[in-house]
Image 1 (spheres, rainbow, N blue to C red):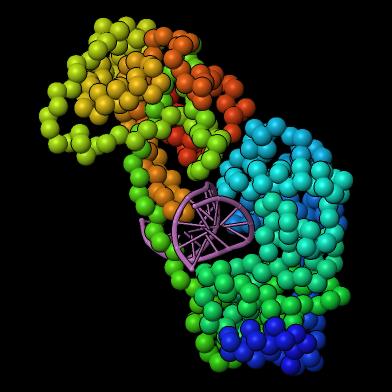
Image 2 (cartoon, protein in one colour; image 1 turned 135 degrees about the vertical axis):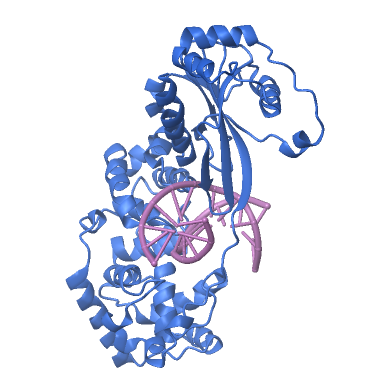
Length: 426
DNA sequence: AAGGCGGGGCG
DNA sequence: CGCCCAGCCTT
């Protein structure tokens, strides 16, 4: 009952029975009538500019609408067109993406903008095949931009669409598997309204995010409940089929919060590839704590006890007062702190005096790793050290706004301010 | 095909 | 707190 023999094969293999033409027509009407009535008024739905629509689609990958809206406005403000994005400095585009996550998205988008300038005269290509060649544009985004910006009947299969379709047709394919996407694309190609492909795709996604949700869906109020095989057969709880992701692996790190004599903080730029590439954080190191707990490796005594007292008395009167009251000498060197000093001396050529442990300690969960950062605050006497690595910089707090901070860094900074700043009036 | 890559909302 | 949300790139 399809026009396409390729689709026929796919449907047969997946056990899908495609609807007759009149049912497809009725489905389009039910879905689009609902969309016309209920669609949200979103900024990128007020434009037909392919660049703006492209920006919105890249931002909306793995990111909620409410989160995206302010970033969308700010980004278009700073980079109003393809040429502006292509020419922007990297730190500017990272800053504009700060907090959004998956930062390779914006780097790839800039590469694509440069591609468009070089190969398409700066004009966004209006052909799905050409669109799909752009860096960072995969099958979903190619379909979304083609259909929404250019009214080309291409499927835009995201997680919402796979969930909706798996329930409508009781499709057993595992939506976590890349290979399954082909099945859903074939289904949408059969169903998509050639008159309003962009609205059709957006309607499916809206439905998936509001009514046909992953948890606690409301099929009884769905505009397309009459088409929902899983609902009619009482199998809603079985769809979609999706294998679970692995748990993030815990990783313990030490966050090094150092200030120099000018009250500047040491920041380090992360490597240009990998996790949080090119973003700035307080130096993060990973001590081998297992090796530490074993032997009673004599911790070197405070290498600068006198300096410590001087520092504390001079720059941190409240800290000095607090430690005196508690009947303690200024921060004793634990084994960990001795290790820390060794690592900091080796990596950064600095000899800090540690003033507080467990400050700026935070947890941050990525999709595959769980960072557990223990913060250590210290001061260094020397100012501009010649051995400071290339990727490091002493930065005044007033200039933090010029640096792109990932969320774990923002958390460390917040914690440090709450725990140490207020406590000691630094 | 599998793994790397961020961040936030919900119960 | 653990659960959920997931496209594109690289390997």
